[in-house]
Length: 176
Image 1 (cartoon, rainbow, N blue to C red):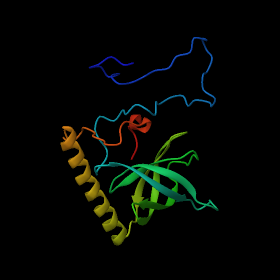
Image 2: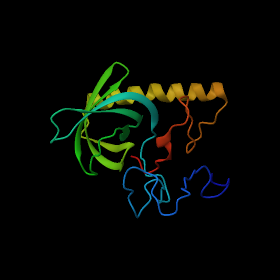
Image 3: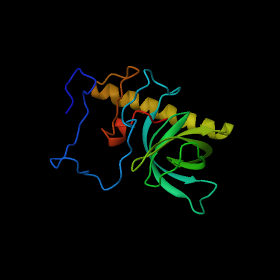
Image 4: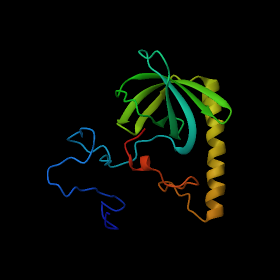
């Protein structure tokens, strides 16, 4: 476990006792660490909100929709947990179920985390879909603020509050 007040605070490592033996069932990517955010500042233009919603993803080459679970969403994009890897730059047609609302938009894959999911940027969203998303996010912002106030948690920008609790993808800082 990373030492408090260091760049490794909150990080957890895994090490094998068999030197040179890989403990994972899949080949690991070498080079840049996907789990370390190296850009000095926040890249997101819009605040994101945790959510639990279903998502259907279609690519130009897919015959059937790829199903996933939405983890967070903003006016600019979302992060979906899914097992099927897609390439960065792939254009998608998304259907997102927010409460009882079906939101459809085009999107672009901006980041991938094999075995976890993908970050996407919304592109060419229609006015009515944008309005639906704005209404949903306004409700979530109000709910988040009310929950934080009840729990005595700060809602200062840059701090993450959640009524849903921690989740593994929170460590994936390069999501969109």
